[in-house]
Image (cartoon, rainbow, N blue to C red; front, side, top):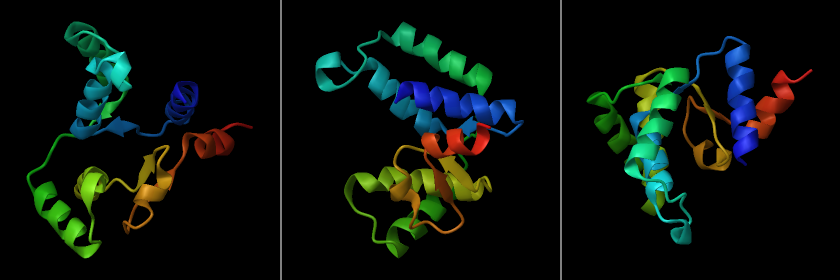
Length: 132
């Protein structure tokens, strides 16, 4: 899945699209990077994870946390009766709302369909749209 993710981002950047991440995305990436391989992680050291994050930050825009995202998140989880691990996706949706971001590229596009004002694209869909 890594190759498709990288290709879709590269295509968007080549097309002049703004591509960014949220601090939550970086935190979740750090989690995967530093979690042991036996626990479905990459087993990187904190130093290596930092290098990976710095590379991401050099390529993509980082949209900072905003205080109003908390209130928006609360509205979303109540309105949509969000339960369990899905609260993390709701937090991303809330941050997108406060930053006026309408599109997300994710392998979990179905998780974002319930949120108004957000269109979710899989990397495969982006590749299809941007490849002649």
